[in-house]
Length: 118
Length: 111
Image (cartoon, rainbow over all chains, first blue to last red; front, side):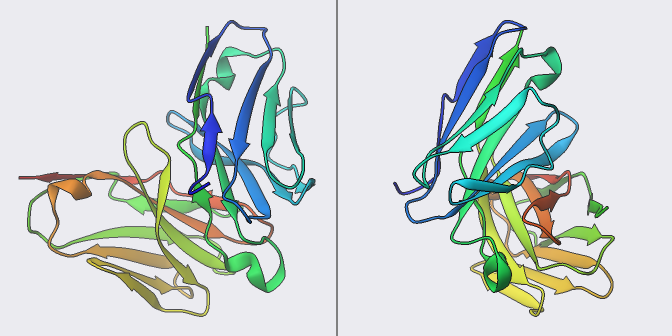
């Protein structure tokens, strides 16, 4: 597509439920990133994919968070047993490449999923 | 750990003014620096990207400079317009693949 697409745009769920957030990157972009934007915290990195593999999962806050990417395209971020502190906007970005000399490619962001845990 | 600071946190200017947003970072070993704009309830729109070997980039009324040795970047907006009202975020890429973001400058341009 023309830009990074994320769904749903808003998600409200009860504490303890599992949620899945979806990201469809720009066509042809091999690198995909998940970030979280919390009120007062700014943007924090969660995980990076190059193709279908995730060489950098360093930002995932706990083992309740997981992500996968299939076919080198769509990615899903899953949060199990959600807690109120998981409430945030989850942003996905993609870029052409992520390694070596091509680390300098700009990241393009979607509009995010606003997650609210009751 | 790379720390990115943006000053001021908020800024209000009358339409037509030229303005400068500041970004500083603690680790000068960066790959690049990217400026974004974020409108309320929206994602990030990439404005300018400066590679570590570059000094500045320009796009329309926007000009971004980079001084790696001093750990600073500025975003200059010429002839500001109400449509420029948004939050402006600065982000640097160090080792690895993640961007380290500042907390942003909230800009309001009044008619």
